Length: 280
Ligand code: ATR
Image (tube, rainbow, N blue to C red; front, side, top):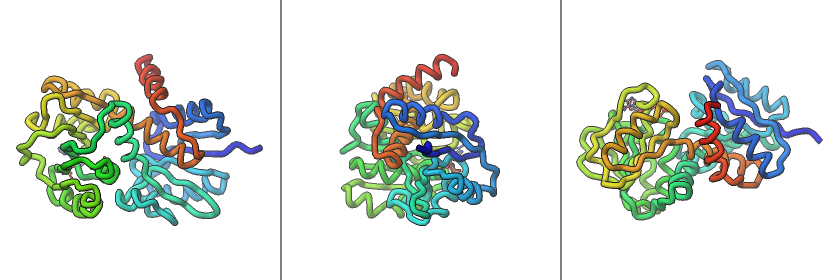
């Protein structure tokens, strides 16, 4: 029997935790597969995907900076990947390239299951309107919050993102609005940082008045990059959470798409935190 091949493609990809996660998922669920990482030169993405399919690849995860190209390369795309205009999961089947996006459903699973906070009826603030924010807005709306504000430094990008999602918001009875980052005067139950500020060390992009006492303050980054945001949230009476759980949950959802089995992601999140704390 041949072993099914998967990989993560990105640039850079050296520090990706995906091979570790998928190897553990496979072990725990008794699946036979091999998952590695491939650093792809900018401009070489489409050729690399086709070469991987030739090698017998069954699917791959896509990370920065290729998520948009991945969505464009697909022959079929899921509704959530069309709304996001980006894909983090490709599946290769019968000569087709199927694109999906599990980032948003991974974020919602981490908040609702791992942090035990159902989003239905809550007031949410999504900060940022780039690729990371676009990847999660649809699934956040599907969790039926009462209100969701998208705030961005450049207002027109938030307005475009909101316009694209307005029909979905109406289906879930969610009031969806776009705001300028510096014109926010309300407080929220959950705030989610989807800007690139943690990566660049630019500091927290909003005023602390957006935090309801005890609010969940979520940074989609993890590791040292997220620390400034986490410290800020704690200092202002919020409950900080980094994006490690989202990483594990989006991987578990990709594994489910490929293998038809959802691995025990909560257990894996604890394991991965221990691995990272141990300096590995
Ligand atoms: P990604 O794919 O990580 O989302 P992106 O598409 O380049 O990357 O988007 C980056 C996001 O971070 C944008 O929302 C950007 O705001 P602008 O649209 O105004 O550029 C936001 N961002 C980056 N640096 C920022 C800063 N210093 N303060 C506030 N927002 C910032």
